[in-house]
Length: 254
Image 1: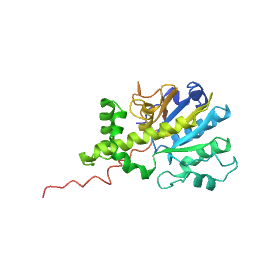
Image 2 (image 1 turned 30 degrees about the vertical axis):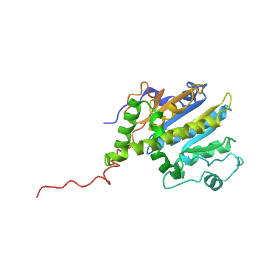
Image 3 (image 1 turned 135 degrees about the vertical axis):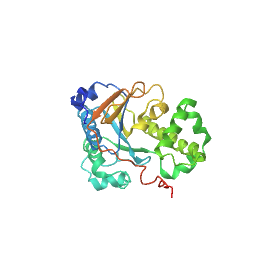
Image 4 (image 1 turned 180 degrees about the vertical axis):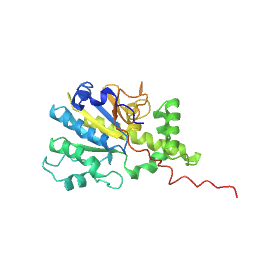
C-alpha cells in the first residue's frame, strides 16, 4: 500500500531552499534511480540562480578538473558535455543535463567534483586517509562499503575501498572550497552517502564554511536526525535488488 505523502512534499522547492539560506554550501543527497530527485536538483539550481545566490554547481557526476566556466551562457549541450568529459553510461545526460544546463544558462560555472578515476589506485594505498574520519565514522563507512558491494568484497579490500570513498568525499569538499563566493551558495549534487554529515563531504570542510545538507528520500521517510539537516520526500520508485545479478546462485541440495 502506498504511503501518504509528507506535508513537506507539497512545499515548493523555492520555499524549501529559502528555509536553508544563507549558507556557503548546500548539499543535495540523491537516490540515483529516483527521477524526481534530478527534477528537484534542476529546480534548486533555478531557485538559487534566480536570486543571484548560486556561486557554482558542483557535481559528483563529473570528475575534478572538468568545468564549464569558460563557456558562454548559450553554449550547446554538446559543448557542455565535452567540457565536463561527461560519461553518459555512468550518468545519463537526460537525467542530469537539465540541472547542468540551467546553471550554464544562468552564467554559473558547473564544476566536476568527483575524484578522477586515475587517482583511485593511489587513494587505495594512502594510509593518511584513514585518519580523516574518527574510528566510529570510519567503521560506519566500511560497513557502507560492504553493503554497497553486496557483501561480496574480500575483507582485504574493505580498507582500500573505504579510502577511495574518503578520497572522493575530500575531492568534493575541495570543489566546494575552491568555488566559494561571498554571499553566495555552492550547490553540490551527489549521492546521499556523500552528503551524510557524519561520514561524508561535510567532514572535510573547514569550520568557517557554513553547510546545510538535504537528503532526498524516495518513498517511506527514514530517520535523518543528526545526519542531514532536512529530508525532502518524493514518490516511491520501484524497488530493485541491484545485487541480484552479481550474487552467486544458491546451490540446491541434490
